[in-house]
Length: 87
Image 1: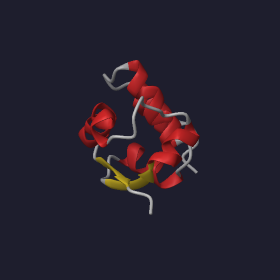
Image 2 (image 1 turned 180 degrees about the vertical axis):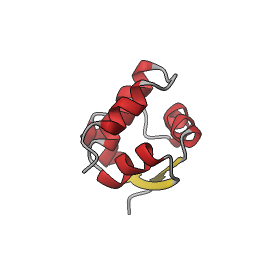
Image 3 (image 1 turned 45 degrees about the horizontal axis):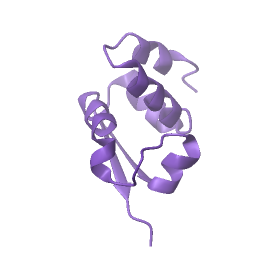
Image 4 (image 1 turned 90 degrees about the horizontal axis):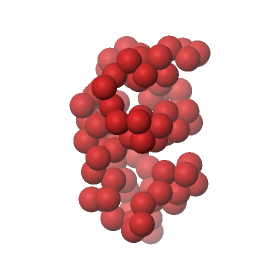
């Protein structure tokens, strides 16, 4: 367990506070994502719109483009967020 090192690293980054809080929420559910943040390694996270909603990361519509600020910010720190369609 990385404890809270990943949060400390995120807090030190120049990221808009609303996006930062969404990243903290998303990473809070995934130890491997936390580890990637601390170690600066690339990581791929696949989620569904329902999972994002469940975490409280919501947009007015379930459209990938509405999540672009979050996706792009994660990309800057080496994390690829893929929103997969539900069948």
